[in-house]
View 1 (cartoon, rainbow, N blue to C red):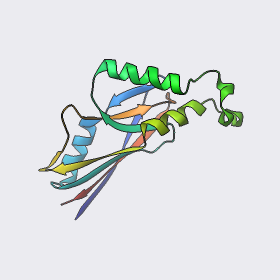
View 2 (view 1 turned 135 degrees about the vertical axis):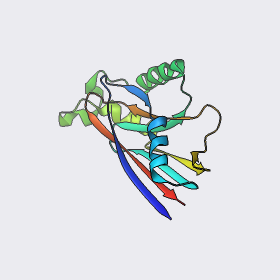
View 3 (view 1 turned 120 degrees about the horizontal axis):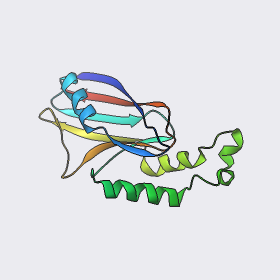
Length: 139
């Protein structure tokens, strides 16, 4: 069995944003040489997410609006976490809703997606460099 590991780094210039990382992960899969197996992609920061969905701009705006309604950034005094001197209590909650990772089957050397599926990095406390782990195992 082969095992492959790579870190991808992203800096989202705004507080919240979504980045399609499908191409990055496909490149990792090529580098891995795995033809049959599993690919784990996970955010290595507690205010970021990895998820699978459609690459449609309206949906991404819907996500941003919905998340801001669920856990608005302001007032920052709303969150006990922010008493530590942080202002990102909302980002931790948004990450919890959107999830930490995605696992995709690898079949025939390709990511085995359903229709319209793509992999996204979700950022909820941006403006600094953060990483995503790609771990691929298989044969």
